[in-house]
Length: 112
Length: 112
Image (cartoon, rainbow over all chains, first blue to last red; front, top):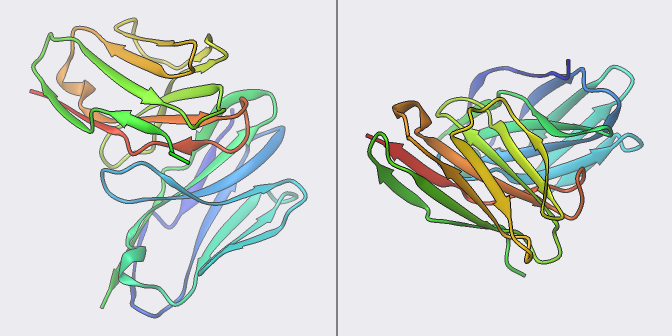
Protein backbone atom coordinates (compact mmCIF):
# COMPACT_ATOMS: atom_id res chain seq x y z
CA UNK A 1 0.00 0.00 0.00
CA UNK A 2 1.29 3.44 -0.94
CA UNK A 3 1.84 5.54 2.16
CA UNK A 4 3.36 8.89 3.04
CA UNK A 5 4.35 9.77 6.59
CA UNK A 6 5.37 13.22 7.74
CA UNK A 7 7.08 14.41 10.87
CA UNK A 8 6.78 16.25 13.09
CA UNK A 9 3.02 16.65 13.20
CA UNK A 10 3.48 20.26 14.26
CA UNK A 11 6.20 22.63 15.30
CA UNK A 12 6.60 26.16 16.60
CA UNK A 13 9.59 28.29 15.66
CA UNK A 14 10.66 31.85 16.24
CA UNK A 15 10.72 34.28 13.36
CA UNK A 16 14.08 34.23 11.62
CA UNK A 17 14.92 30.67 12.64
CA UNK A 18 15.30 27.68 10.33
CA UNK A 19 13.37 24.41 10.44
CA UNK A 20 13.29 21.08 8.62
CA UNK A 21 10.27 18.92 7.89
CA UNK A 22 10.52 15.22 7.08
CA UNK A 23 8.63 12.98 4.68
CA UNK A 24 9.02 9.21 4.36
CA UNK A 25 7.16 7.30 1.68
CA UNK A 26 6.55 3.77 0.49
CA UNK A 27 5.03 4.74 -2.87
CA UNK A 28 6.23 2.51 -5.67
CA UNK A 29 7.01 2.72 -8.51
CA UNK A 30 8.00 6.29 -7.74
CA UNK A 31 7.18 9.07 -10.18
CA UNK A 32 7.59 12.37 -8.37
CA UNK A 33 7.35 14.07 -5.00
CA UNK A 34 5.90 17.47 -4.31
CA UNK A 35 5.83 19.74 -1.31
CA UNK A 36 2.79 21.96 -0.96
CA UNK A 37 2.05 24.83 1.41
CA UNK A 38 -1.55 25.08 2.54
CA UNK A 39 -2.94 28.03 4.43
CA UNK A 40 -5.99 27.29 6.57
CA UNK A 41 -9.11 26.97 4.44
CA UNK A 42 -7.22 27.44 1.18
CA UNK A 43 -6.03 25.09 -1.53
CA UNK A 44 -2.48 23.71 -1.47
CA UNK A 45 0.14 25.72 -3.34
CA UNK A 46 3.05 23.90 -4.91
CA UNK A 47 6.50 24.72 -3.53
CA UNK A 48 8.71 22.14 -5.23
CA UNK A 49 8.42 19.05 -7.39
CA UNK A 50 11.16 16.48 -7.78
CA UNK A 51 11.54 13.42 -9.95
CA UNK A 52 13.68 10.37 -9.32
CA UNK A 53 16.87 11.93 -10.67
CA UNK A 54 16.66 15.15 -8.67
CA UNK A 55 17.96 15.31 -5.11
CA UNK A 56 17.68 19.03 -4.33
CA UNK A 57 15.37 21.78 -5.45
CA UNK A 58 14.95 25.28 -4.10
CA UNK A 59 12.17 27.82 -4.24
CA UNK A 60 13.25 30.98 -2.48
CA UNK A 61 13.68 30.21 1.21
CA UNK A 62 12.35 26.68 0.71
CA UNK A 63 14.75 23.86 -0.14
CA UNK A 64 13.58 20.31 -0.69
CA UNK A 65 15.79 17.24 -0.79
CA UNK A 66 15.03 13.77 -2.03
CA UNK A 67 16.79 10.48 -1.35
CA UNK A 68 15.09 8.01 -3.64
CA UNK A 69 17.13 5.13 -2.26
CA UNK A 70 15.91 5.57 1.31
CA UNK A 71 12.57 7.01 0.16
CA UNK A 72 12.95 10.11 2.24
CA UNK A 73 12.46 13.78 1.56
CA UNK A 74 12.91 16.91 3.61
CA UNK A 75 11.77 20.50 3.31
CA UNK A 76 14.03 23.12 4.86
CA UNK A 77 12.69 26.59 5.59
CA UNK A 78 15.37 29.23 5.99
CA UNK A 79 14.97 32.48 7.93
CA UNK A 80 11.33 31.82 8.70
CA UNK A 81 8.74 34.57 8.40
CA UNK A 82 5.35 34.94 10.02
CA UNK A 83 3.78 34.23 6.62
CA UNK A 84 5.37 30.77 6.65
CA UNK A 85 2.79 29.71 9.23
CA UNK A 86 0.82 27.03 7.39
CA UNK A 87 0.47 23.31 6.85
CA UNK A 88 3.14 21.71 4.67
CA UNK A 89 2.06 18.62 2.80
CA UNK A 90 4.23 16.02 1.11
CA UNK A 91 2.54 14.42 -1.92
CA UNK A 92 3.94 11.45 -3.83
CA UNK A 93 2.90 10.07 -7.21
CA UNK A 94 3.41 6.56 -8.53
CA UNK A 95 3.96 5.95 -12.21
CA UNK A 96 1.18 3.39 -12.40
CA UNK A 97 -1.42 5.09 -10.21
CA UNK A 98 -3.37 8.22 -10.99
CA UNK A 99 -4.11 8.79 -7.31
CA UNK A 100 -1.80 11.05 -5.34
CA UNK A 101 -0.60 9.83 -1.95
CA UNK A 102 -0.81 12.61 0.62
CA UNK A 103 0.98 12.93 3.91
CA UNK A 104 -1.04 14.23 6.84
CA UNK A 105 1.00 17.43 6.81
CA UNK A 106 3.17 19.32 9.27
CA UNK A 107 1.66 22.42 10.83
CA UNK A 108 4.27 25.14 11.19
CA UNK A 109 3.64 28.11 13.46
CA UNK A 110 6.09 31.01 13.28
CA UNK A 111 6.02 33.37 16.25
CA UNK A 112 7.46 36.85 16.51
CA UNK B 1 -2.64 32.70 -17.23
CA UNK B 2 -5.49 31.84 -14.87
CA UNK B 3 -5.02 29.06 -12.36
CA UNK B 4 -7.55 26.45 -11.35
CA UNK B 5 -10.83 28.19 -10.61
CA UNK B 6 -13.42 26.76 -8.25
CA UNK B 7 -16.90 28.04 -7.51
CA UNK B 8 -18.51 28.84 -5.26
CA UNK B 9 -15.89 29.61 -2.63
CA UNK B 10 -18.25 29.00 0.27
CA UNK B 11 -21.73 27.62 0.66
CA UNK B 12 -24.02 26.41 3.38
CA UNK B 13 -26.55 23.63 2.81
CA UNK B 14 -28.96 21.75 5.02
CA UNK B 15 -29.01 18.00 5.48
CA UNK B 16 -30.68 16.14 2.65
CA UNK B 17 -30.06 18.82 0.06
CA UNK B 18 -28.01 18.46 -3.09
CA UNK B 19 -24.99 20.52 -4.08
CA UNK B 20 -22.99 21.09 -7.26
CA UNK B 21 -19.41 22.32 -7.15
CA UNK B 22 -17.62 23.59 -10.23
CA UNK B 23 -14.02 23.57 -11.38
CA UNK B 24 -12.29 25.18 -14.36
CA UNK B 25 -8.83 23.72 -14.99
CA UNK B 26 -5.79 25.56 -16.25
CA UNK B 27 -6.00 26.08 -19.98
CA UNK B 28 -4.62 23.02 -21.75
CA UNK B 29 -4.99 20.73 -18.75
CA UNK B 30 -7.06 17.68 -19.59
CA UNK B 31 -7.06 15.97 -16.20
CA UNK B 32 -9.21 17.07 -13.28
CA UNK B 33 -9.27 15.45 -9.86
CA UNK B 34 -11.51 16.09 -6.89
CA UNK B 35 -10.49 15.79 -3.25
CA UNK B 36 -12.30 16.15 0.05
CA UNK B 37 -10.37 17.63 2.95
CA UNK B 38 -11.91 17.50 6.39
CA UNK B 39 -10.53 20.04 8.84
CA UNK B 40 -7.22 18.90 10.27
CA UNK B 41 -6.75 16.03 7.83
CA UNK B 42 -5.08 15.52 4.48
CA UNK B 43 -7.08 15.51 1.24
CA UNK B 44 -8.95 12.32 0.34
CA UNK B 45 -9.29 11.33 -3.31
CA UNK B 46 -12.83 11.36 -4.71
CA UNK B 47 -12.62 11.26 -8.51
CA UNK B 48 -10.29 11.74 -11.42
CA UNK B 49 -11.34 12.56 -14.96
CA UNK B 50 -9.07 12.58 -17.98
CA UNK B 51 -10.22 13.49 -21.45
CA UNK B 52 -13.82 13.48 -20.20
CA UNK B 53 -13.65 9.90 -18.97
CA UNK B 54 -13.68 8.79 -15.36
CA UNK B 55 -10.29 7.29 -14.63
CA UNK B 56 -10.65 6.66 -10.95
CA UNK B 57 -12.96 6.80 -8.00
CA UNK B 58 -12.08 6.92 -4.34
CA UNK B 59 -13.87 5.27 -1.45
CA UNK B 60 -16.91 7.54 -1.44
CA UNK B 61 -20.61 6.57 -1.56
CA UNK B 62 -22.72 6.78 -4.69
CA UNK B 63 -24.13 10.07 -3.41
CA UNK B 64 -20.99 11.57 -4.90
CA UNK B 65 -20.85 11.90 -8.67
CA UNK B 66 -18.90 13.98 -11.14
CA UNK B 67 -18.50 14.70 -14.80
CA UNK B 68 -16.12 16.48 -17.13
CA UNK B 69 -17.27 18.62 -20.01
CA UNK B 70 -15.80 18.98 -23.53
CA UNK B 71 -13.94 22.13 -22.40
CA UNK B 72 -12.40 20.00 -19.57
CA UNK B 73 -14.22 21.86 -16.81
CA UNK B 74 -15.80 19.62 -14.22
CA UNK B 75 -18.65 19.40 -11.76
CA UNK B 76 -18.87 17.46 -8.52
CA UNK B 77 -22.37 16.63 -7.31
CA UNK B 78 -23.26 15.45 -3.85
CA UNK B 79 -26.81 14.27 -3.12
CA UNK B 80 -28.59 13.75 0.19
CA UNK B 81 -26.03 15.79 2.11
CA UNK B 82 -24.94 14.62 5.53
CA UNK B 83 -23.32 16.64 8.29
CA UNK B 84 -20.14 14.65 7.66
CA UNK B 85 -19.91 16.02 4.14
CA UNK B 86 -18.84 19.36 5.58
CA UNK B 87 -15.33 19.89 4.26
CA UNK B 88 -13.09 21.79 1.90
CA UNK B 89 -13.51 20.36 -1.60
CA UNK B 90 -10.43 20.74 -3.74
CA UNK B 91 -10.08 20.47 -7.48
CA UNK B 92 -6.70 19.85 -9.08
CA UNK B 93 -5.79 19.92 -12.74
CA UNK B 94 -2.89 18.47 -14.65
CA UNK B 95 -1.86 18.29 -18.31
CA UNK B 96 -1.76 14.51 -17.93
CA UNK B 97 -2.56 11.92 -15.30
CA UNK B 98 0.59 12.11 -13.27
CA UNK B 99 2.63 15.29 -13.33
CA UNK B 100 2.31 18.83 -12.10
CA UNK B 101 -1.01 18.93 -10.32
CA UNK B 102 -2.21 22.46 -9.55
CA UNK B 103 -4.89 22.92 -6.94
CA UNK B 104 -7.67 25.43 -6.84
CA UNK B 105 -8.48 27.42 -3.71
CA UNK B 106 -11.29 25.06 -2.86
CA UNK B 107 -14.97 25.27 -2.01
CA UNK B 108 -15.82 25.30 1.67
CA UNK B 109 -19.06 23.33 2.14
CA UNK B 110 -20.89 23.50 5.44
CA UNK B 111 -23.83 21.20 6.01
CA UNK B 112 -26.14 22.18 8.88
